[in-house]
Length: 88
Image (tube, rainbow, N blue to C red; front, side, top):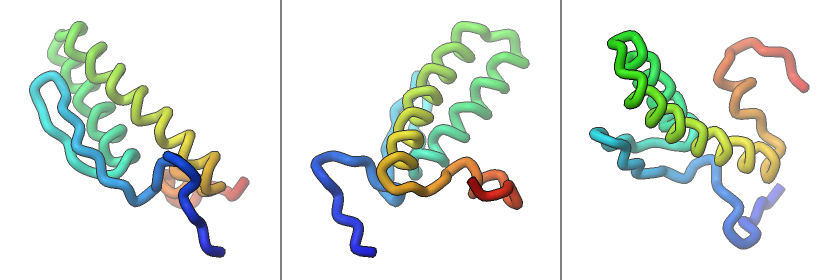
């Protein structure tokens, strides 16, 4: 099927340049989301709750982008990320 982008629907293959508090992450929405999640965990384990919270807010933003992409394309980001997850 020829999937044209209707006015600003995010694209799964779109690459984002994300400027976090002290980091620059480049990748698609899922990769950026994943990276911020990991960094939030790291910050939390080092006892830096403020930084962890900041990273989580960034992650949440990209999570919403992922949801929008899923809605627009009918593709499951997370199902693909968790290999072997049942369809649907």
